[in-house]
Amino acid sequence: MAGKDIIMTTQEELKKLHVVRKAMENSITQNQAAEILDLSDRQVRRIAVRIRLEGDEGIIHRLRGKSSNRTLPGKRRILRLFKAKYPDFGPTLASEKLLERDKIEVDDETLRLWLIEEGIPYKKRKKRPHRQWRERRRCFGEMIQMDGSNHDWLEGRGPRLIFMGYIDDATGTPFGRFYEYEGTLPAMDSFKRYVETYGIPVSIYIDKHAAYKSKKKLSVEDELSNKDPLTQFTRAMGELGVEVIYANSPQAKGRIERLFKTFQDRLLKELRLEKARTKDEANKVAERFLPKYAKRFSVKAVYSDDLHRPIPKGLDLDKILCIREEHPLRNDFTVAHDKKLYQIEDNIRAKKVVVEERIDDFMMITYKDKALKFKEITVRPKEEEPKKTYEYKIRKVYVPPKDHPWKRYFKANTNTQYPQYQQREKVAPKEKWLLLTK
Image 1 (spheres, one colour):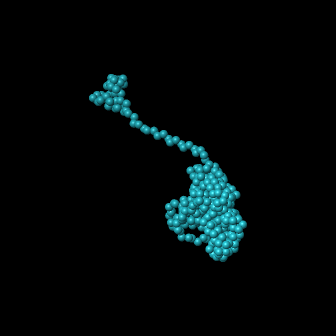
Image 2: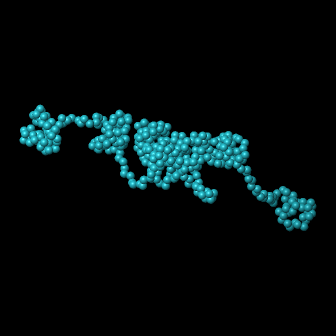
């Protein structure tokens, strides 16, 4: 260990001390010393003053052995929090959550360098393949992209959910809600909530999922009229005047796909921090998350016009956004729908009625837009048992034996009581008996 009379300096400081001493001894000028040390003459004079007052120790920098004035406090604490709470977070998101939840401010680049210095792994962005860029639509509400993301959003804490997401093509404003499955009713319910929030958009960009693109073969009428068979969702979009545009590949609707990729990182971790376990809890977290995300990441459209149409007065969204099917009315005023039987209680004369299955699990049966009273038949009448069929068997002729009493009597009285058989004595007994019966 160095003694009290030994000064610990670097080679650079020793060089600086030697040159300044030469200037102090007037061997060289201060300007020459400044050129040699690549300093200003003012700095050389300051160093000379410190050496006169403190001796050779004055050449040592005052911050030697001290932390920098710009050092962030709690570096170890920040790294411990990162390992414990945000191990799979990226530096940017981790720095945001440290400020929001732990009240610790640290720059994302500083945190990234600390992680590299300590050898702590962190999530990195993957390189994406090059795609041709498509220009955004120019107005808010001109086109929205919609899709469903099937992901383990609750990370095993609850059921597997589907996030029905929307994003405006012009501004990137997101919207969405969690459901138990991706289908017609979740799509209609989420679209209704979008319309109630922003209005009716001009067009919607969707993929060819079975709920949005019909897989049925064209009928003769459809081929003659040059129309494609519609699903319940596309039928509802047509009634609302929303143009449906189909994407031929996931990359074609890249904005909604990238939004899901971001949400599977940020929203998933938000759900984890809030300890959401059910669909309702996840929707509450999403309602708080989406406005903050939109405020930070949405962009301004080229034009400030909002092309969303307000909901017209008198328009019943529930009547349009529903599963609507036409069924024949039977002679006993019953209707079969979804493998169930319903009894119509109104006395009407109709060949067909319309069954509406609404998004709030409410069902209606209508005829000419008039609601009918009905009830479900839970117990069906027993079917009548088929009538028994009888088999008619040929009855055999009874032939009495030879020693039958009647035959003995017949032989004894044939000549006296039955003279017509006198000439037929040679006839066999069986034939005599048959002739007698005649």
